[in-house]
Image 1 (spheres, helix red, strand yellow):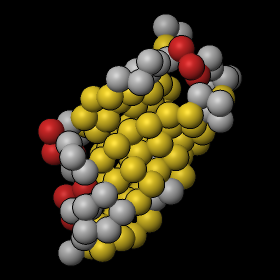
Image 2 (cartoon, rainbow, N blue to C red):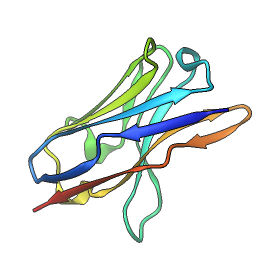
Image 3 (cartoon, one colour):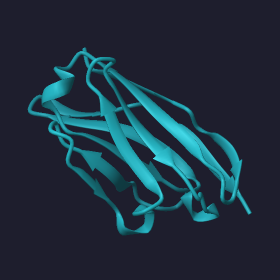
Image 4 (spheres, rainbow, N blue to C red):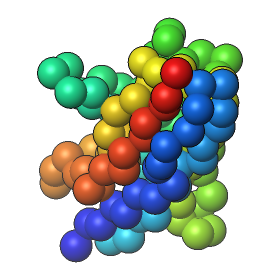
Amino acid sequence: QVRLVESGGGLVQAGGSLRLSCAASGIIFGLNSMAWYRQAPGNERELVAAISSDGNENYVASVKGRFTISRDNAKPTVYLQMNSLKPEDTAVYYCNVNLFRGNYWGQGTQVTVSS
């Protein structure tokens, strides 16, 4: 059974930082790309960052230079370090893995950035 459990969200002032974590189980973590998505009220869910099994990173333009995705295959956990946060980063953040047998999501963690 695939399970993704996010943690690390919260309330932070603009310019602050948060680190999200996503602990994965039920998958061969080291062989799979992992991703972070977010969804703000009234908006569609959008891809924020992704990291391949060999560590290649991709980011949506709005977070480049501020967010960093990383992974620890030994734990197995994927992280999202978020710096210089802006009010427009406010959203529920979801961890994602897309496998042959299905597309899996965590329960989400709320990030709120106050101005």
